[in-house]
Amino acid sequence: MTEKKEIKKLKVAWGITGAGDKIQEIIETMKTLKQQTEDKVDIDVYVSKAADTMLKFYRLDEILKSSFPKVFVESNSNSPFLAGMVQSGKYEFLLLCPASSNTVAKIVNSISDTLLTNAALMALKAFVPVWIMPVDFKENIIFTKLPNGKEMKLRVRKEEAAQVRHLETMDDVHVFETPQKVQEGFLEWLKNKSAS
Image 1: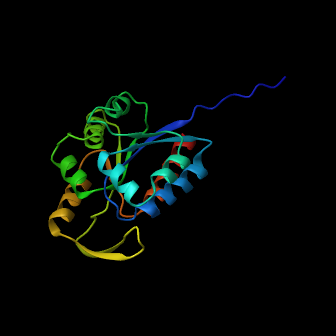
Image 2: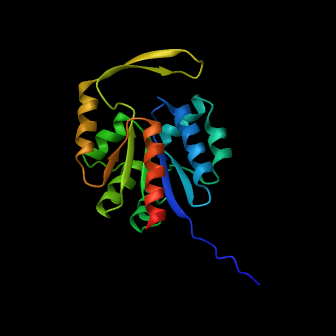
Image 3: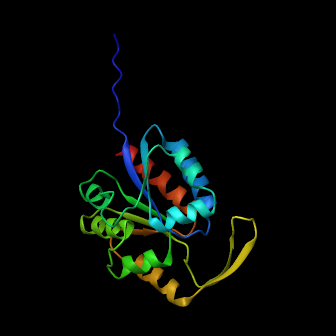
């Protein structure tokens, strides 16, 4: 009789902030990543209060919940207790994608008053990597898609871009410009993890 050895899956925490830019693309990318890695990785989703509102506005909340088995919504900065789970090593890393300029500025300035900023800062204190895809990556004019399909022109100011540059200098923080770069980084991380 042959026994199957059950392989323990790696766990990743994916945090969604209230930034709506590229949200549909991000969810599709994460669904693809889930399919590509589901035999090796479990992805738990943590939604900020602002993200909960934004996802409903974009009519993506039910798609997210039907695509990922564990979706938790922020009650306060410690509930659900993501910071403790990240610090205790339950997760390999914390991914914030998308990360609003508000979230980026709070992490850069060590303000931990939301579920995701608290988890990110506690992760960094415990040497747990934090991966971040800021929507305001560089000073630029961008066009974001609204739920009705129309585009809105926005300016990424030098002030927001400067916060991202500061974020890039922080220990154990990995910054990604696009959902595709997150996907590439995730697959490369898993390849290296599997090889070790």
